[in-house]
Amino acid sequence: MRVVFHLLITTVSLLAACADVPGESTTRAAVLTANRVTVNGVTANRVTVNRLPAARLSTSRLSDGSLSVNMDSAGKLLSTEDGREVFSFIVSCALPSDVLLSADVDGTTYGFSGELGLAPEWLTSSLTSEGQGWISACIFARVNANDVALPISMRGANLALATDADERAAWSVEEGAFYGNLFTPMDQPILWVACRGAGQASGEFGGLIERDCAEPDPANPGFTKCGFVYAGDCGSFSSHQACEQFSAGGTFYRRCHEAPLTSPVKNGGSNPLFSQVITTYVTP
Amino acid sequence: MKYLPLVFAIGCTTSAFDPTEFPESVAVEAVTACPAGQWCIESSPATAAATLLHSVWAVSAEDLFAVGDDGMILRRTGDVWAQMASPATANLRGVWAASSSDAWAGGVGGTILHFDGATWTQVAVPTTADIDGIWGSGPSDVWFCGSGTVLHWNGAAFSTAGFAGVLLSVSGTGPSDVWATGENSNLRHWNGTSWTTSNPISGTGTFFAVLALSPSDVWVTDFMPGKETGHWNGVKWTSLRTGSGIFNGLSALAPGDIWGAGGSRVGHWNGTAWTTEQPFGANVALWSVATPPGHVWIVGSGGLIAHRSL
Image 1 (cartoon, rainbow over the protein chains, first blue to last red):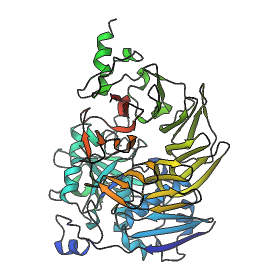
Image 2 (cartoon, rainbow over the protein chains, first blue to last red):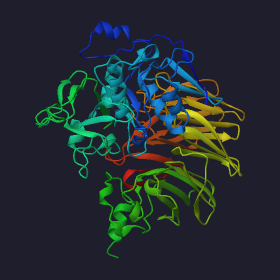
Image 3 (cartoon, rainbow over the protein chains, first blue to last red):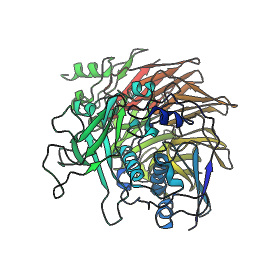
Image 4 (cartoon, one colour):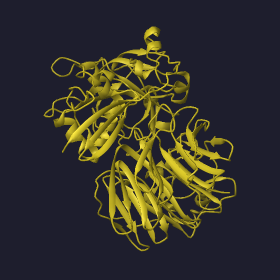
């Protein structure tokens, strides 16, 4: 099998995004308005949960415009339909919308579009631990256990996830927050964690009806209905919150743990902390 | 007779819909006539009452198919929905029929089923991808789209084409004019020889549904506020606001009479503008719409089957 990547950066007009990133420097926000029109963090969620464990990539440079794809990871991933599905989500999460990666696999060309741009540096350098965290959170947030595609709004302390008033108004129901590490070694399990948001804690309605990954599974205590580690409720609406901070203006959580802050310590005395957290919202 | 009042109550109502209120005892009772211009909830067979129904297709006003989770296949003939024997247990996501004796269903894990008028059978296909959308111009020109792939049935055999992304919907006007789209997929067009890719709406590569009425009249749906639909007039794409409707499914009675369903909202294009409504309340998830002459049908989660006579 031959895998060839070409980096194409399309020419786009630079439109002001009117993006609002509460808690972040307005100067930085202005620099990164780029081609976004609105809804930086809105995407959909048809990732299939059981495909992720076998869909890991190395963190080495994704592409240098020629042949630098890691053949042991991306090459294998691209050889199957399922793998191309997952890779499309990885590219969608990592790269901005003005980037298109083309891959030739056994004579067939596939185009993978960037969308969110959470780790654009991956094009030119190895993926940092921060980038791994953002891509992991993004992929986990887009998992749907019910084989359906739904629009979600993803928010977090990353300029690529800036929101505007339209987005916050349309996607107003807080589902939960997602974080963890998709880039664990192949012989170790993926670490995927979710906490329950205020909307999900209040019931099952609107866009929550077919979103279950931040919902605790009564039949499997300690896990969500998607099999994620369940960290408890995300915020201060619960007495056992998993996250340390909530950005009210940006409507997202920061610094979330694997277990509630007031619960007994786990993993030999620690309660792992994750700084790359994506909070998801659905429509009412 | 003791169930009759329940049949009437569920057979036609415009009040908020609660799938948990389905009594199993009304499973296959005929419903009362649905007054023109009103939304009515029809009874799902008991086993489908809690099932996510994801796709509906109308062969005619008197013959409809619907599919959903756990291999569920329903058919409406004689004014009654009934469950059909299904050879699949996978979640089914798409259904399309050339006629009452030539129907296809597709779903998770490369599941493709064919109905010959008497029996549904599982068809061996060269893919394990999830199949989400099905459309054909005739019995020998049927397209299936799914995760990273498009399959074509020419009446004798399948061929495949690989794509990035998750293709959710396919539609066309003939063997040389087929559109497919989906999540991270942009918009793909088959001209009879090759596929080309375009992006009709700036800011996203994800589109949930595509509906082709003619080569110069094509619709797509997406989630971008203020431009939730896109229309191709043969020359250019135009974004059109729905008024908060994000549609998973589209169907048309005529170019100026198009219906959409998604989330908890139903939308209608009257040739000039979209209007949306929430006829079943907020606690529903609507997935697909079909429009045989004089009728609109919508299916959704919780075994929801809604009907409106025009």
